[in-house]
Length: 111
Length: 109
Image (tube, rainbow over all chains, first blue to last red; front, top):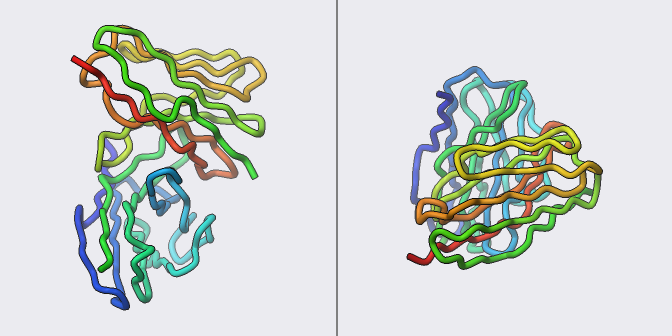
């Protein structure tokens, strides 16, 4: 089975901190995605990547950046965390074919 | 841009009863995904539909895509406590998925 692993289930960070959320997949997928999920707003796409060192903005990229130095790892970076970035963050990967596989999520709280 | 509307937003059903969740798209659907999410966890893939009129089943869950490919429904027969969670529909849009806001399903014992 494809596995997408997010390094932390829960994180608490202070306002202004630089935050790294890590996502690793084990199936050589080209496409990887970062979403955030908020009550009443559903899942919104932050950034995605089609290949190593490639990145594309999603619907809500402001305040975030990403890094894809290796195919299996896609990192989401909050340059200066703010309270409105408190959310559930979900990583997903996909290769040609049917399904997108999601990680278990990281619940980030910024205080 | 494409938008997906799910209804109802929330559903409370007695165990053993049938239920239906709907997903309506503002544009033609070229791939429609259904996912389930338990509270605080990641998304679990249920089914993908691509062809107009297509219907797929997995255990007690059946999903359909209408002929015009703008609406999908998810039907659960004889609901069980294990069916509780959030159900999300997603539309394939230029190799990424756009999601509806989800339907929260509660099952009463």
